Each structure stands twice: as structure tokens, then as C-alpha cells.
Amino acid sequence: MLTYMEVHLYYTLPVVALLMLLLRPFHSAQDRLKYLFLCGMAFSTAAPWDNYIVYHRAWWYCPKCVTMVIGYVPLEEYMFFIIMTLLTVSFTNLVMRWHLPTFFLKSTLSPFQSLCVRLLPMAAFLTIGVKAWFAAIPDTPLFYGACILWYVCPVLALLWFGASEYICRRWKGVIFSIMVPTIYLCWVDKVAISAGTWHISERTTTRKMVVANLPVEECLFFLMINVVLVFATCAMDRAHAILHFYRRGSAKMQTLQQQSSFFATMLDLTKAFCLSDQMLDDQPLDDLCTTWNILKAGSASFYTASAVFPSNARQDLCILYGFCRATDDLADNEAVPVEKRKQQLDLVRDFVNDLFTQKSNCATDIDWTPYMDLPEDCLASFRCFVRLRHVLQVDAILELLDGYLLDLKRQPVRDEKGLIRYSECVASSVGEMCTRILVNSNSEMAGKMNQSTLSWTVDRARDMGLVLQFTNIARDIVTDSQQLNRCYLPMTWLSKVEIDSIKNGRARQLGDDRLKELALRLVNTADGINLRARRGIDKLPSDCQGGVRAACAVYCAIGQALKNNDGYPMRAHVKGLKRAWIALQSVYDMNFSSVSSSN
Ligand SMILES: CC(C)=CCC/C(C)=C/CC/C(C)=C/CC/C(C)=C/[C@@H]1[C@@H](COP(=O)(O)OP(=O)(O)O)[C@]1(C)CC/C=C(\C)CC/C=C(\C)CCC=C(C)C
Image (cartoon, rainbow, N blue to C red; front, side):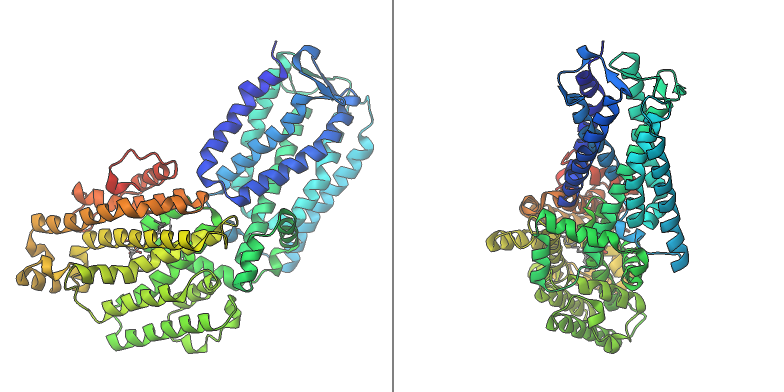
């Protein structure tokens, strides 16, 4: 005999536990709200529906297989409403989390097409629901199947109203998220029916079997409930993405929005849910796409690591990266005369000062006329960057621009102090900005972290910036010499001949051993600072710690590659699979590798 509680202990709860363990480092406040709301909706609607079905003897339970009955339904069945919701929603989260929801907001249909895609299936769902309601006559073969349809179809019509195009654009993930839990739960159902734990009445079903001991109505039940759960998860992801991406207003309003109550959040999500894709402004979506491509093309390390951040944080870090990369490329573009590049950097500085002079974080509130001379992808990243206005502080951005100017003026790095000063400008400033983004991205932390903790954490992030910059310089000694005629090593570390060789593009003349000695001196210094810097990660929001650990570990794996001579001295490289493995190790805090590639 197999009791219902054993079905949970052996078949359902272990799967939920495994999924929750896999998702533990990624769980955000947004995910917790999803679980809470969808479990609540599932329980409050399934309880009465289930009692009605069992009252009409559509199925029954072996009395010895259940602990207690509440109404007409055993306790284990009430547990199942929650367990099935957690199983399917967590599996959907695991499948969907690797792509930003924002990228699936843009409508590619004409308004008429969009209306048809939205309304025709809704009409079909409602028609089926009404017909099923009248077909659900107790003690008839269609009763159970019809009850399933009048229960789910109105909900599907509502979900389709709010997320139809989004669901269609994510159809692969949607189908996979529906089918895997459905097939698994059908199998569990077959095992339980075969063991006599419960019995499906022949009087209220068509007696058609998918396989032995598995009525077609049972498959229909699991399939339709999972369609509802996956559609609902998509609808909430879409609503959250709209709220985060189109959120406007003052810093205070933003912080208040993030700290708002469950009901205020649900009200905002409902408003976002009711917005059709046609109502959304496309320009910001196009700009985000451009910025995303800057990250994808700009840094394999940061692009890989970005995948393990929660979507809000990942999106804002991508925007910050796009701004940093676009402006760094402006300063580094040797095809443009130095004076022109200085003018362009001055324009960027004007843009930043403009941005922090006005109060809005909305790109349409800025007069872009003075900046039209800048490259289009630069402008796109700037329009995206405007939304971070209330998150960042102007000093760190201006500090970064100061670092670019040092580069542009080809300011020599005279000694270690000069190296630290330059690195603080171009990398510590970035670490500070990343930290403010991560703290802001977490609604439980935004505006609540006390100033001394935030200040200490920012200092550790600034240290981490040094770690990554030193690693970057150690890796690029030869390429910076050959491509930029630049030497970022402290001149006090080098002889005059070595300085001339590097500055004239002939760094290889130092010999591989000497180059490796210099590189490792930087990497070892970076490892030392890392021991201090990484303590700051523990102060970040829990759902971002894995991501930061991954970003820094993936980057610092370059240092390990240098030690292992992987590709040295041209440009130490960490292969894609290795980067992904390091990212996953970091996320689950399983540091199997050595210090320099882990944090
Ligand atoms: C996961 C993710 C998307 C993070 C984004 C990080 C980000 C915004 C990076 C911007 C990098 C950038 C282009 C800065 C301009 C100046 C510059 C070139 C700096 C050097 C970066 C290398 O970037 P690149 O695109 O060349 O990358 P590749 O080498 O080609 O792979 C630097 C080496 C500096 C990078 C410094 C940071 C990213 C700061 C690190 C600190 C944190 C993430 C904060 C950690 C927080 C705590 C509390 C420890």
C-alpha cells in the first residue's frame, strides 16, 4: 500500500526540495512574491473546486491512505495544491531565468494583429469554459473533464489578456516548463492509482486511458493546471519587468515604491499586467537591446557572470556596463584625433552634469541636441543610463571620466601610487556604482541599509575594482603595448629600455619570463587585495552575492590562467565552459579552485 503522504515524501517533496536548492542563490523578493501569490491563488480556488469534485465522487481515496479529511478532501490533497504550484513555478523560474524578461516586451505585430492574438484565444477559452460549465453534469462521463475546463478556462482567458504576446515570444521555455512537470506528475499519478492510493471513478470519466491506470482526464488535469501556472508565472515576470523598466520619478518615490507593501506591489503589478505591449514605448527597449549587445561583445567575463544575477540587477548592471564600455571606447578610439576625443569626453561630462542637475530619470526629459555628435550606440547607452540617475552618485561617474582623461593624455604610471590612482578612477568607481545598483535592486534593502554599512561595503567594492583592474593590466601587457602603445605598469618596476620597448609596441622584447614575472607581481598584489575586498560581498543583497562572486571569480580566473601560461603572454583567456563552471561554483559558493579564481 502507498499512502498519500508517502506519495509526497517519495515523489513530490524531494523534487520541490531539489528545485528550491538549485534556485536558492537566485531567489529574489520578486520570486518570493510569485510563490506567495500563486500558492495563495491555487489554494483558494482549488480547495472549493476539489471538494465539489470529490463530493460528486469523481474520485476517492483509500481511507487507510490518508491522515485526515477536511470537508470532503484529505489533508494531503490540500498540501498537493501548494506542492504542485511550487514544483511547476520553481521549475519555470529555473527554465526562464537565463533570459531577461524585458527583451520579450517589444511587440512585433501591428495593432490589429496584436488585438487578434489577444482576443481570439480569449474568446475561445471563455467559450470552452461556458460549454464545459453546462456539460459538467454529475454522474456523467464528461463530468470530470468538463469540471477541469470550466475551472481553468476563465483563468487562462484572463492570463492571456495580460501576457499573450509575451507567452508567444517565450514559447520554447513555456512549452518545456509545462510539459516536464506535467509528464512527471502524470507518472506519479499512475503510480498512486496503481498502488490504490486513490481511485478515479469510471462513472464520471470517458474511461479512455493514456496508458494503463492513467485516465485521459488526469492528464488533462495536470496539463491544464500547469498551463495556468506557467502562464501566470510569465504574466508576473512580464509585469515585474514593465514596472522595473518603465519606472519613473524621484529617488524618494523609487525607494518608496520598492519598500511598498504586498498589496501596493500587487496593485502596481496589476496595472502593469493590464498594459498591452502596444502601449509600451519601444525606444527604451531598442536602447536596452543595443546596450545588451555592447556587453555581449565587450566582455565575455561579465556577460557570462551577468546570467546569475536576478533580472532587475542584471539589467541595470548591463546598462552600467554599456555606459562604461561605450565611453571607454570613445577615449580609446585611436582612429579619432586626440583633440576630438577630448571634446567627446567633455560632451560626456556635460551629459553627466546635465543628468544630475535635472531631477528626472526619464530619457525624454533630457535635451539630447548637444550630444548628437556622439556615436549612436553611445547615445543609446546614455538613454538607458538615465534610468540609473537616482541610483548612482555623480562623483563616481566623474571619477571614471577622469580615468579616461588620464588615458587620453597618456599620463604615465610613474609608480605604484600612480597605478592605484589610475585604477581607482577606472575600476574602483565602477565597483562603487555596481554596489549601489545591487543594493538598490533589492526591495528589502533599498534605502534601508545604514550609511556606515553601505560606506564600508562601497569601500570593499572599490578594493574589488583594483583587483579586477590589476588583473586586466597583467593580462594585457602585450596587447596594450602592441595596440595602444600604452604601459600601465609602474615605471619604477621597469628599466628605461623596458619602458621604451613597451611604449613602442615591442613588449615581447622583454622576453616571456620577464613579462610573466611582471604580470604575476600584479596578480599576486590583486590576490592580496581580494582577501579584503571579497568580505564586502557578504553585505550585498543575498540574491546578488552569488552573481558578484561569480563576476569577480570569472574575471580573476584570468590571473589563474596567467599562472598556468594559458595563452600567455598574448592575452590569457578563460574558455567559455570554464567561465560557466566558475560562475556556477561561485553562485553555490563551492570554491574548488585556488584563491585567484575564486572569491
Ligand atoms: C556582471 C556584470 C554585467 C557586471 C558589470 C560590471 C561593469 C559595470 C563593468 C564595467 C567595465 C568597464 C568597461 C569599465 C570601464 C573602464 C574599464 C575598461 C575597466 C576595466 C574593466 C574591464 O572591462 P572590459 O570590458 O575590458 O572586460 P574584459 O577585460 O574585456 O573582460 C575593468 C577591469 C574594471 C572592472 C571593474 C569592475 C567591474 C568593478 C568590480 C567590482 C564589483 C563588481 C563590485 C563588487 C562588490 C563588492 C562589495 C566586493
